[in-house]
Image 1 (cartoon, each protein chain N blue to C red):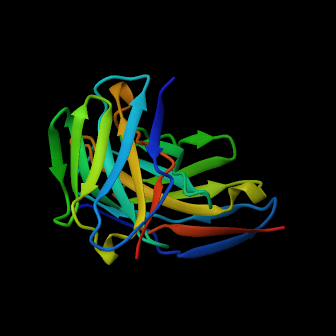
Image 2 (cartoon, helix red, strand yellow):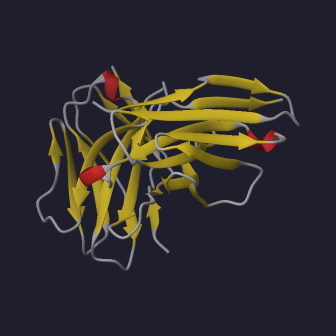
Length: 113
Length: 114
């Protein structure tokens, strides 16, 4: 069965520090991968999505970037964090005949202080 | 552009009762998918139910069912025999058949009263 792993679960970082959040999917190949951000009490905002290795689409201009170095690995990065980068980050994937269903990781709670 | 609207920021229901969460959407497309996701306090996003727009029959998953009104662009979620574990944020989402992206509503917080 397919599983998605996202880490770390919680992260506290100072303003101006770098960021790296990682997401990996197991049990499938060539998934579509997504990064979302969710502010407290709000809906999901799509940040990036990828349909293949090295293929990244950005939805929101911001301080963040994404990379897909391997088929089932999706990384969210920042060179210098801002206070406004605080939030809950979710990774998701879709694949195969159920490409229309997105399955989510457990999320990372990022606090920038 | 497609939009999804959840007009109820918060709903409450007595345990074992039935509750309906509202969702409306705006699209000019005829082929699309609609979803309800649940986000409990753990914040893990969990798929509750899915509806294909070309299907007239409303989707059902155990105690969860939808009322899909395509002409009215309405997609409500009915939860029967509410349980304490149903307490969560519920998000409605839309996806065009020609696009990988989900369009999300703002969510409805469901409170279950024991």
